[in-house]
Image (cartoon, rainbow, N blue to C red; front, side):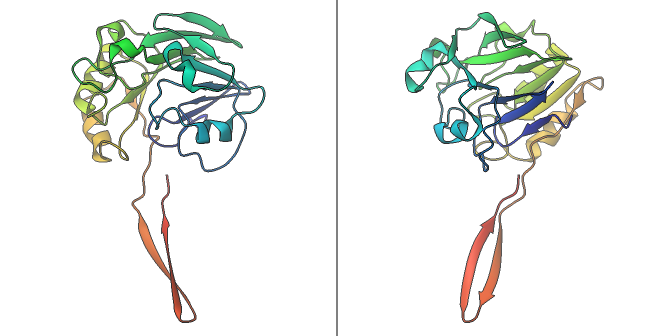
Length: 227
């Protein structure tokens, strides 16, 4: 699975048959400008970051957004509503709703999205920020990217229930360990998953460390954060 990397939160990068696809680029350190397609699930700062999508995009990049947030984007984009289906480059893309059932953070009326994408050799579903909603009960995909951090999305228990219902071949947990949730959520989630589903950890955090560097009579402090 070296063609898939998770930067942080729900910031996903996938290489497929010579193409580079991003979902919700966030806290991008280097300017790569290598994106062929950038998918945005909704307009919260950790998913719709202009500073970050500009680091990965170039003049030929195709952006895909929920139609409901297009006013926040300066440029051309393919705009989708829940239940829309389209073809982008060589990929079939299906848009699904993403919302909270009883929490106020992602109202259904906002028409935020999750994306199912048929890649060259497998299909993926990126949930976006959502709970286990009825529209996902009949989802079928090879690889599932599911938020497990709770508060703004489903927690690890609800995410495990969704995963076991969908039964993908592989599940990759996202959206935990930084802004919401803890690193331990991964282990708790993994223990609840059916044996035939492979759980892969792509989101790694190393705690902040303070290093002390002495230069003559002065001290320089700096932080190191590795993902």
